Length: 367
Image (cartoon, rainbow, N blue to C red; front, side, top):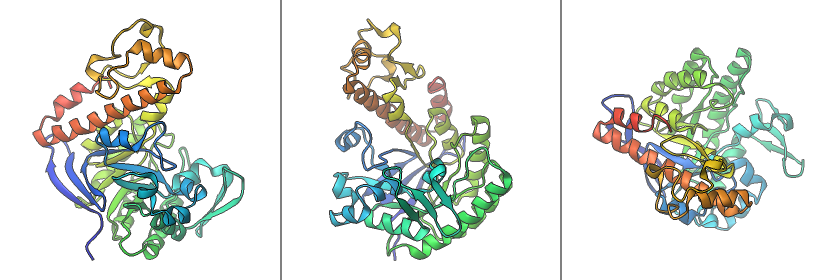
């Protein structure tokens, strides 16, 4: 059977390990490297899918755990799947709930069989097995399903990181056995900050017939000086003929570093979360819209980071909206940040294709 998701390598960067590619999905191709806006509950905060389409996005991320609790995957299935339910025409990748097992650890218990949660909504018990995670994602009808993994926090003991590798492999095998016909799935490499555990996990996970592979267990509290060596060490261990996804990493400089290591896909809440906290990304660095310097600034925060969808709104007006508590301020800032990230990824792809990577790095040196 022809895979429903496949990766096409288009070009390589002459200066780095960066790759220009295309991810073919049932809902159309996605040019890579690509950034996925995070729509945890089937919606990107304050932004409509028509906005994402206008900004050029073709792939978003949603979350299995949250959608399973509300409104429920069976309801979404009965209403035609997550694409029709949300009216999104592009591709969807869903996280499996492994990250929630870590972030909600005070309400969760984990063993080799499953993760048992207390729902953050009403406290009721929820059991999530690798099989159930795959079944939920099949009911959602998404393009890429992530396997349930054991995401160890930082800091943690080596013993816990090693156990996370073992359990992640066990669950990956069970996930493959449980997936529905035609259901595309990505495996996840764990191992914490330990190079040998990363190598072991990569060997075990890449031996399995997944459509793509992810680097998990980063951006979980570790400092940049520990995160980047993990990415640099792990990315080349993943197959060149499959997409490589770095989970949860989204600072522009971290994206540039990971792309240079050979990573293709990214997701992060930063663009919209920072926007709700009145912070905007520009080529001059991140700016605080509440700063007094913008009170009378009748123009953009940065003329080199002005975008058609939001350029009509001045820095002074946006500051006023935030000061007045108007939700429009957070929406404008969210659209701005998503436009910034969209341009970043487009310029990354262009730099790989044209061999101008050093110029790109210089352009974004302050971002």
